Image (cartoon, rainbow, N blue to C red; front, side, top):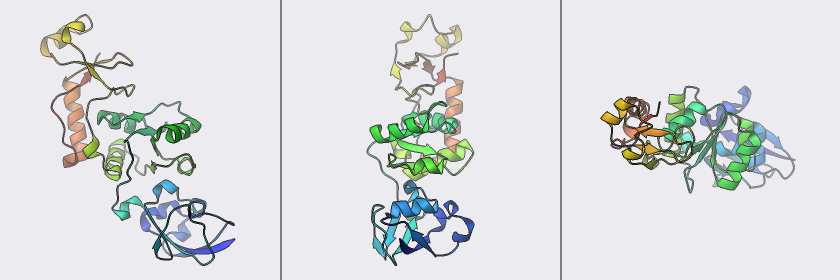
Length: 252
């Protein structure tokens, strides 16, 4: 066992028990514990740690804790960093359906299903490199999850802003290029090939259509599309530059 001193930045304090939130404290770590093990034993998922120092020097989460170590941890908010990934692909747990839909609206590949188990989420994170979005702190402590985020806010609009800000997603967004239902990339389709499926009013007013190759849903730039654009602009403000009309209202 090694006793170390921990200094946890306020942006991570919510993960600690109340008596440890406002000051440095000593903690008895398990034998041969890594800093990851120690921080997670305190309640802080490793995905939430942006900057870690031990005795004033930069350290990694796999460093073994030694007697008398002074360990300081900061979260992504205080560090000013953006958590980087080779590809911006997400998996959202069952409780974040609205957030998943908003991310798909931005053209960000996001797997979501109400039936997704924790085991499946861990497998998608490990095998596919997906970033896990969840409000389950214990899930984020799993070793299979290299990248993830504990979503702190409850309102979907605020959740979207939180995730976009944390990962610097505005520059990677390609709004209205994914199916909102099944996450597949939309493909252009000639109007002539859809005439039998289109309501007469839609056929008269619109010439640009896209189809989901997965669920066969048809999209066009209708009134629902305009409302979605307005909603994204309201949620993200100047952080996002919306493109010209690409796809929009799903088939009725």
